[in-house]
Image (cartoon, rainbow, N blue to C red; front, top):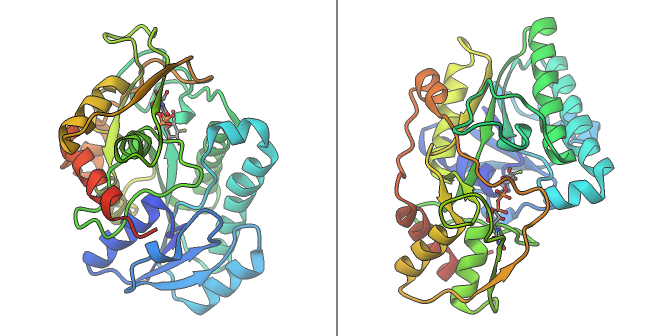
Length: 322
Ligand code: UFG
């Protein structure tokens, strides 16, 4: 049985569905602080657990025979991490140490961990490969980097088998629109653009038009959430022969303006925009060198076109259940 820790969240719920579709048995654990109970596929078992409540973790591992863990449970708001770093280090770092120690006590030696391109900080070059220096510029990125280093220490000392997946910008939703992206508060570009199109929001603000990029707006690497889910399954299958860190991105950079145009094309409607100053801590350009993940996992993103990615998000936005 696979334990999906944080499986009621955006990427965790899509990965749970993918694992179930592939024939795995899954138990989802989540504290439901940011996750949605309705996002958890009905075929999965569900357990209320919290990384900072060791007893809840022990109960979980005592109840289910867990072979491997996929660990998504983390706080992931960059701005909030600057205002309240204690919350981020407690949940993301201390919580993960609790999880690793309970895994060890129950002799569970495999983990796939959600890391982030935020561990690289301000990029020195693009595309960013895994050897790019890791100098995160906010507590969120530092909390994820700390866990990557802890995983490596546990591998060396205790034989832990781990793969840390450094996501670039997760986007889109399941092809059948049964689940999708739903954050409160919502800070991510694509859902905000779609909400401006539906009228749920008045406008979307474009944070900065004076970046050193072809159209002046920030460039990001949007990777479809189902491609991320696939990579997690492949990583689980690879843990016996590889431990380390892999980038997960589409390997293509898309600007904020290009995202807005793609959303307008998909929806057939105009997106009301407002120009705003740069958001603090936003690098001009981030995109991945994804060759290592392709090589090690035999993974290839299926979604390569921005409009196809946005179409799935648009279908979800029009019919969302949570
Ligand atoms: N943006 C806008 N207007 C908005 C929201 C975003 O112009 O209302 C821009 C941002 O400036 C950025 C791009 O759209 O250039 C994407 O922003 P998101 O907030 O959607 O995503 P980020 O690139 O900031 O964040 C993502 C992940 C984080 C991770 C970070 C690493 O969501 O978890 O990448 O850089 F930490």
